[in-house]
Length: 473
Image (cartoon, rainbow, N blue to C red):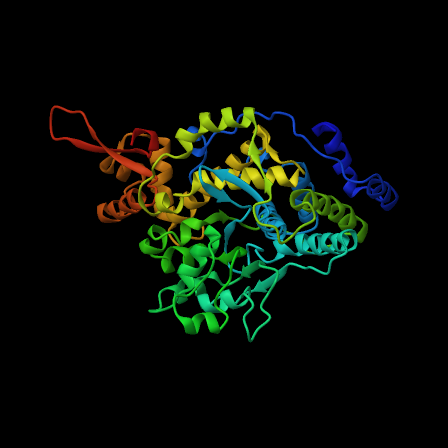
């Protein structure tokens, strides 16, 4: 079945119950997406995006099944499409476990992602974004329980991450006194991720190290005998974390060390906002949930061969065309970036491969195609835009004081303007010190919004201001 036929089938998700029932009866189809257009990385698009606008996801970032779920979840909801999609990817990657594997050199990559959903508290609808995916995946598990004759269900831990020992206990191994936990799959939804950042600062707290080891897929094995007796040992863990935090909290409570030591750069940072108002949201009809649950169940079964507790048994490989695209994109993808933003993006290359694997598995395949890689690159680009947007704004939540914004707009309208000329443009309603402070704000953002250059002149050199061009660095 080609992508066009599959897309037509997926459109029927919003059709009437009779048509939906017919879709379920026919079973899931296997989609292979047509070659979409090239998805450039953010550096390729420098200057084409409004630096004051929130990030935008390229259409390639929503392959057919993911797009169908997102469209359905946002049809009568204020949730942001990227937040919904992030929950789908988290739930899917947690559910398939560590049986699917992609080798990157000698490293084994599993479909395991950590994500930070960043937005204003109470306004970004971060929690709303998980409701529909939860219904779909719960229904998919019920379908798989019947198909595979199993009682297994993914364990979900909502909030309360405070210690590494507590996290390890949730997936602990058996010992002489405790039967332990057989299913090492765990989805953690931490709605107050700022608390995690606070706990990680406490002396002797092992939470940061534990989170880093879990992302790496390493066994949790305390050095002390007392730790092993108390249920802190967990082998072959498969833990997926999705955290909620405001931009202000992320900026103010995260330290340079959190980024540099590998804690925060193990998370894909995604800025979201409320894209529309829906005063009277309606529930998604049960037949629609059932149709999408069947498709998700098919993808999970294909990815795992029906075995949730496998380890490195289902290899996912790069196809020849995807290999060529990867080699083309790799130099740009792995470019160094300065400051905290650069530290937060340090694992962009690895995440591009992990995400491509997840998109491939969602399409019930084991060979990564260019469409999977392009979708992954779109998500890395959105991540990059999010980091830039969050850390350049005055309060981290997408707001800038009105005068600084006025100065920025004046520079955008008149590239090469000087501080003296700015005073004239602003009708001399502000003092030189106020203009200086606004310019310093724009120059010190991460990344900056403007840059200062010396104006060639025979007399006293003047400083002129331009929009920041990262390609000139």
